[in-house]
Every structure is written in structure tokens, then in C-alpha cells.
Length: 100
Figure 1 (cartoon, helix red, strand yellow):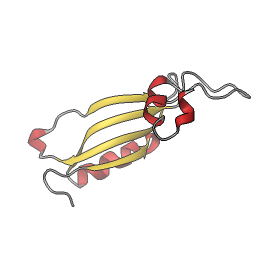
Figure 2: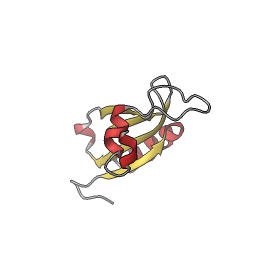
Figure 3: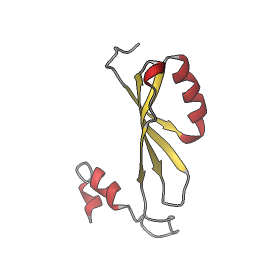
Figure 4: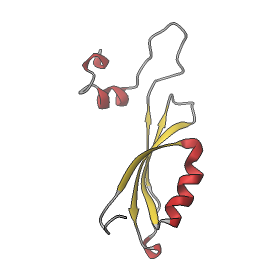
């Protein structure tokens, strides 16, 4: 149960989005933000970073959508990952070695 101004934030697997959409609808929640996480630019999304909020049916708006690419391309066997600039920028404060 959320207050009118409350929000539920979660990480959800892409292959289970229909399940979440149905459960959110039943709980009278709307996805207001959806950041799709891709392993690399050509890959399907692996996960979604979601924000759900209580929202009356009369105020339904499409979610704000964005994406985050983890690596610049498919991983090459025996080679280190080539992390994207956005991914390194987000994680460098927590893992300083990623900046190099």
C-alpha cells in the first residue's frame, strides 16, 4: 500500500514484464519510469529499472523511458569487457577501477 505520493522502485527481468504489468494494473499502480538495461547495443533488454506509482485511470500517461548499455559491444572470449561510458560513469564512484 502506497500513499498518493509514494513510489515503488524495483529491478525486474525483461521476460517477466507481462506478469508485472498485470500485477501493477490489479494493484492500481502505473509504471511511470522504465530504464531498460542492455548487455550491449544489439542485445535485448536484460532488466528494467522501474518506478511504479498509484495513479488514477484518468491521469494515465506513458512512462518516461530510457536505456543503459552496459558494454559497447558483445563480449569477446578471453578479452576484458568494454564497459560503456555511461556504465562507467554510474559505477566509478563505487568501483574506482572501472574508470581506467
